[in-house]
Structures are given as structure tokens and as C-alpha cells.
Image 1 (cartoon, chains in turn red, cyan):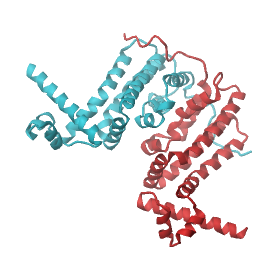
Image 2: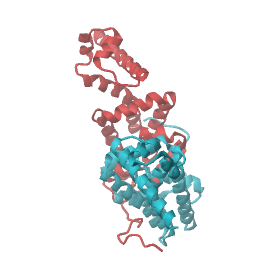
Image 3: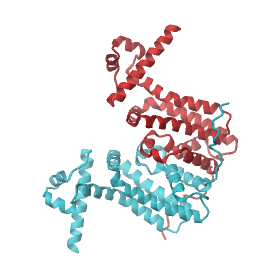
Image 4: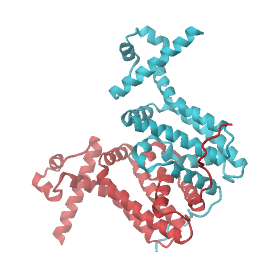
Length: 209
Length: 209
């Protein structure tokens, strides 16, 4: 068991080293390069990361684990649905913003790597959707979002708060984003989102004056 | 006057040629390169584009002019505020989506060039904000968005519909965007957006169960 813990610690150290190298070079690192940087044999690296993708997955895991902790804590809380949904987005936004402001270049690089390896990131985005669906179901039990299917509400809410979840937007419009604005958006969603057609779109098209 | 029209036509043809070259090469074009491509003297090119930035500005102008026409037509229409706001975003979204789907690589390239030369694009974004502010004022005259300053409503609405205005998001989540969803978002904004604090955020922080 102690041996297992030592292995885990060594693996964590290798992931941390890989991330340092990525940030220093501004590019991905292969297992061969990690072996050289760590002055370890390739066989030793293979013990920790059998496949090339295992190293990248470990870095992705490192990146997302604090966000997963936030989601699980919020879901487990006893707050009312609107408070839960605000915290669900606000706490992750603040965590991401801290990371971005601490090192904008590294943050931008990880976003680009995430975009390039979207299939390795997708399960975390799906997990976020899973938790948000649970929040939507709880909200609907309290009478919010009447008439909408969970998937419809999910897609609409994701779109309305995308400024606070999409890292690329954080990079572009950081100074326009705030917890106060996010709170107003969540309040707007809870006050106004429903399946009721209130007439913004009509089939007759635009009549110009 | 006829001479002037001929000059304008020649200038438009040079802009069109520059855009063809940009799309073919996947990179910007200089005035010197345009002269070579068009088999014209550098002096002739200078007549149309005195500064290097004038060529890029002409391309930006070409890109945005149909979007400006849409905004002006919608503003001049006699629709109610919620219908106007929907058309204001929906028509530009559809125009951008047509462009994207017709040639995803070229669309992505122009987005990247726009990001790199943000200062040349900014005036068009500011114009959009100007028109949206006018729509917000008209909406508030009808009782919508109570208590919010125009600039506050402007920023919140821009954030809630950013999926339909930010070209980079169109590239990433095209298949998740639709006019029906945009209509629900605009309906939600008109039903729910106000200065009233409905309690999504509270100062006491998250109490975990």
C-alpha cells in the first residue's frame, strides 16, 4: 500500500514535470521527451503511462479535477436550485480565471491543446452536462423552466452562460466578465426560461417599415 | 463621375482578388504581393490603397458590410422590440453561418485575421453595440429590462447571445445553434432580464450540506 502511494506520488511528479516542460516550451511533450527530461528510462515511463495518450490524459485529469470537485460539492449542497446553479458556474469561473490571470500564456496553450485533443476532453464536458441536467431536474421539481425537456433546457442554459464556461472567451473578454453579471444572467434564466413562445420569432418574417 | 465609378469598380476587383489570394494561401497579402498578383504597378496599387492598412481595412469593410445592412434594416423596421432584437441577431447569425458552411477554412482564416487585427475590426463591433443600445432603449420605453442602465443591459444581452455572434463559437458548436434556440433565449431575456436581485448570488457563500 505504501509502495502504491509512492508510485502515485512519482506519477504525480512526472505529470507536474510534463506540465512544466509544456509551459516552458509552449508545446506538447512526448513520452520519450519526458523520459529524457526526468532522466528516467523509457521502461520506467512506460510503467506509469503505457500509451502515449495516457500521459496527455493524466494532464487533462490534473486540469479538470478541481472543477469536478467544485461540481460535486455544489451538487451535494442543500442550497435552493437558483443558488446551486449560480455556484455551479461561478466557482468554476473564478477557478479558471485565477488560472488564466496567474499565467495567461500557459492557460492559452492548454486551451489550444484541449481543442486539438477534443476527444480526450469530451468526457469532462459530458460530466458537466450530466451534473447540470441534475440541477435542471431539481429546478423543474420546484416549478422552474416549465414545459422544457431537460436536454432543451441544458442546451439553452449552456449557451446563455457560455461566456463563463468557455476558456477561449475568458481569454478574449476577461475584463467584461464578473460574478455580478453571472448572477443577473442566472436570475434571468430562472425568471424567464420556459417553453412558452413569447413571440420573439414569428413565421411571417421581417416586415421592413 | 463615370471615371469615379470605374475607379470604384477596379478597387472592388482588387479587394476581391486580395481575398481570393488570402483564401488560397491561408495567409494575409501585402500590397506588394497584390501588385504582383494583379500584374499592376505598385504606384497603381498605391492609388487605391495609400497605406498598407487600407488594403486590410477594405477587406474588413467587405466582410462586415452585409451585417451592417442587416442591422440598419432591422432598426428601421416597425416591429415590436422583442421581434426586432430577435431579427437583429438571427439574420446576422444566418448570414455568418452561410459563410461558414460555404467555406469553413476561409471563414476560420478570416476570424483569425480579425483577432490578430482587432483594432481594425473594433469599429464594427462598436457599431453593433450602438444599434443594440438603441434597441434596448426602445425596449425599456415599453417596460422591459426595468431598472437596468443601458450599458448594463447591453453587456448582459451580449453575453447571453454570444453563441450567436462570436464567429469562433459558430466554428466550434455550429450544429448546436439554431434559430429556435435563439428565439427562446430572446424570449427569456425579455421575460426575465431586470435589475431585480432574485437571489442567485448571496453574500454568505456556499453552505455545503
